[in-house]
Length: 181
Image 1 (tube, rainbow, N blue to C red):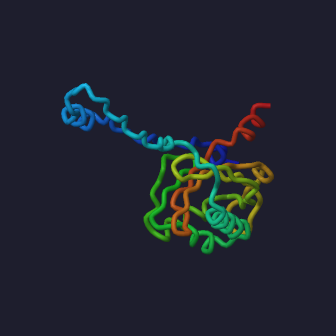
Image 2 (tube, rainbow, N blue to C red; image 1 turned 90 degrees about the vertical axis):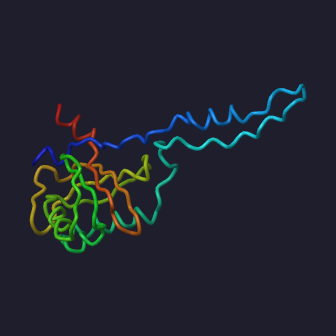
Image 3 (cartoon, rainbow, N blue to C red; image 1 turned 90 degrees about the horizontal axis):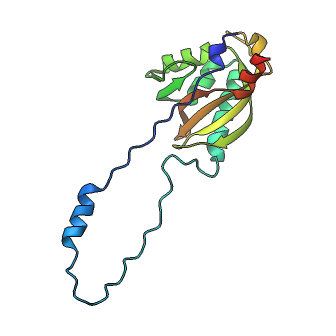
């Protein structure tokens, strides 16, 4: 089994935040001069959540899309599995992220996955992603899961408009530790 299929790191960039430099200067320049009268304190604005913080829950509709994709692939129906992907979409399976720009590229990507998978759990992740944990299975058609059968794999997904827009393999710590023994 190609170990590269089970190991890769989820690379999510952190959004750059502006320093508010000009706005802060403008506010200072426009502040009224001290007159001896108390100026009411401005009301504090509610703090916005950290842009990279995970959401508190995973959208069940998005999980249904990923479960349906995995079920189609596990049953060997690559064409149905490919329909769950948006065009374009971004994938990374032990490689640098690749943009799939055509339906044919999406079908090819799905066909190259050697294992089927059964969704066994999800957890929220930053930037609108969620992490799905799968139990790997053999599947009809091309590909052979071989010794990967029964192992777990984790993938970060982002779903928009009922289609997978991002599919990024996450290093499966359990499998990595198993390989060390």
